[in-house]
Image (cartoon, rainbow, N blue to C red; front, side):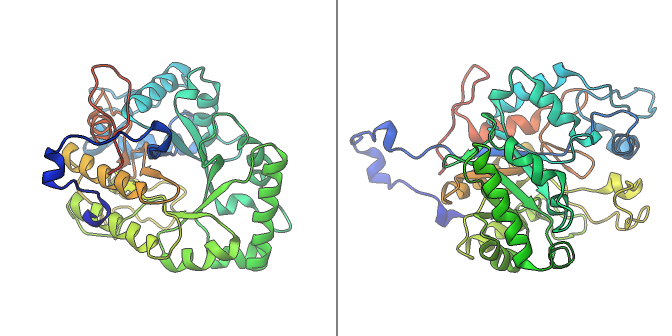
Length: 377
């Protein structure tokens, strides 16, 4: 990625400084987001019980979120009832590490998976970390039965705390497929009509025209669907290549090659940086929504966890790459995909090494918990 960085010549560095650019002429800092997948806030629900079970075995207990109940005797991990103070603390931790927004994986309002978003919206501190919506395409429903997301998301995009790109609300649409386009929408024209209608409803709600980013790691999909659907950019939920017990450096390289392949399409890119990929808790104890997973099958398909130094270096490259793209936005997988292997959130009892790595990559050194952003180069 060195070709995307600006270097100062040695003689120039020794010369007297020239005129300082006025603040209004300097580019805005890169906005940094992190994906939130909130299976952790509904004790007794199917998703929460599944992640408790996945993280209970000894090799995975260290991945439990800092607010989990982790018995010292090796008993089952338990997630406590929803607590506003826990969410408020997460907001403070994220903001001090340099996170500008969380990309919430969106579910119906009544779903237990929406409890994290509810707690976030109820926080008096939520202005410190804005939000974007990350919607699975299936939640848009179909031509004959539009989904709840199509009805409710346009108004959410008008919220003052919704993350914006050039004044436009940021929205991620992912997990699209040719089969879904055909079966749910009767073809690309049907889905394009849904996109156009979504934009119109957002404008009517006072949100303006959304900046819609397609999430796919497959270049051919982005090349076809972004222009045909009238979308604005491309990203990916996660990057991985199915490696067998590979080092973290291989995962970082896979992601960085992915960003370059997306940029080569001539489409604005929101690069997704990887904090890890290690699904072994779900392989050992499969979760109900991954019916294809057989217990213990492919336990060797994972990457080693990053050291703080490795993670910080990869995040710096993601921020620098994002600085070369029109959205000037970077995304991180993830805030809390703990059982899938990618997280920034402190883990039990309170290991915040990954957040400190992000802060080192994104913020100027300060004695306070305030993040002043470093240049994106």
